[in-house]
Length: 152
Image (cartoon, rainbow, N blue to C red; front, side, top):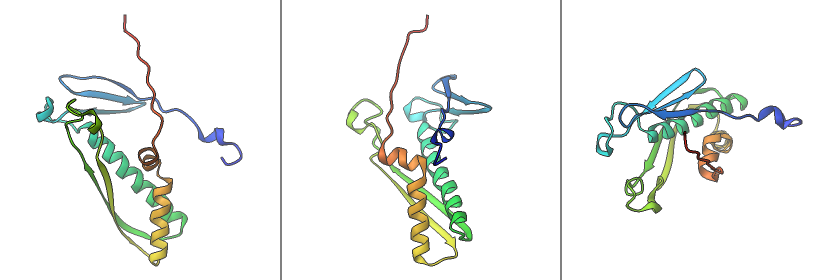
């Protein structure tokens, strides 16, 4: 992939549409996910919120990358837990203050049980955070563009 980067590039296509009430149905290949809003925001609260999917995408990406990094470093990763903490202010989502229409802060606390000294553990976590695509997208920013057309 270093010599031919085009082999590593592609496009994911996810299709999103309305479900009943405030539910949103997302489909990609054979996968489907339904999101809903909390009762306090007009939904039924029966399905995870979009924020849940973002936080779990972050946590699962870090976890997967940590597992790959540990194997590459020949570390015996016995166990780990990740806690994603996301501070929010709903005034942005509700249109009261659009400057707040994002998480205020996202923190990740990792507890790891593996062999290796403290330096190896530091290199493991640094490598994990440097190679996690979701971390990069959130921390460095990814260009987001959109188009819209009227359905006739």
